[in-house]
Image (cartoon, rainbow, N blue to C red; front, side, top):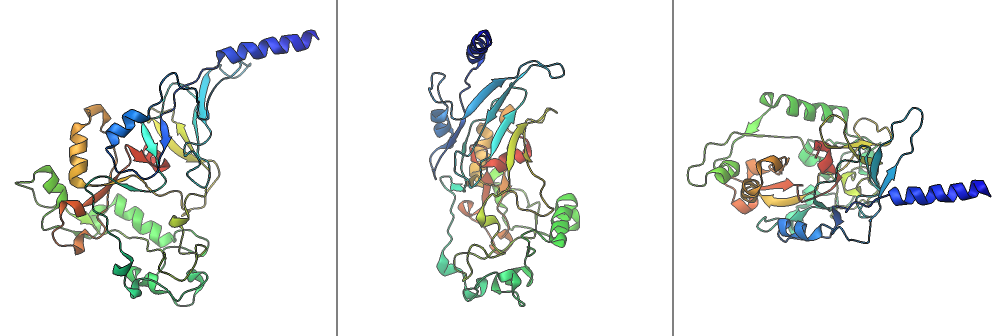
Length: 323
């Protein structure tokens, strides 16, 4: 009886040591409003009654482990992905940056994204295919733009030669072909009246997957990215002053798909103006230029020169860059 009394007393003591931290993640559907204003509204007040799966646990001292708090979130996606993605901060000293978690890209204000099924020609899809296109003896029409080769192996991994080419482009861009805009949208965003000459854009390799106009189903081997995240991931706070990072909880084979980079689709002009309004110490964004077809477009209008920004709205990929 004395043992049970001591156990109950200790339980009550521990419960008074646990605290709640306001969560700064919010799941959202597609939204095209002003991001900064939306973010101001989404931060929970200190009196919020919901901890949203955020738990602060104080470890008990042992002979070999230093007593320290840590933060854990079971699923930062709030069930918007097919798998849960946890968060762990073993230091207990950091909070996530303010952002809205989205599993798919959204469009911000002026960005013009027009993808019409009628514009996709029959030679760019495989409407007569069934089953797994990768197992066919002759590559289907979806491999036409990539030299008759698929990017994936039958096991769903990127081919070794594809990976080597992409790595070489990132490490040695000067050794690869560039195209130059007549009127570069990036330079135009910096100075509309006297833009400098285009600095050049890499002609990158790309993956062409089967899609909704094709006859195959979602189990086709040429549909990897569109099936979404399937591996176990965890956001964690690094111990080397690099902020938040992303790691896998299970070993992945080389070439395995991890996640798509998701964020707001906005024009380069909008991104330039947005970054000018940010404080100097908050300019840690890594926008991705959507410039794969700029070379075939001639002179691009501002609303057609697009990029991805995951600062305000994004998915777990934003943490790959330690943010």
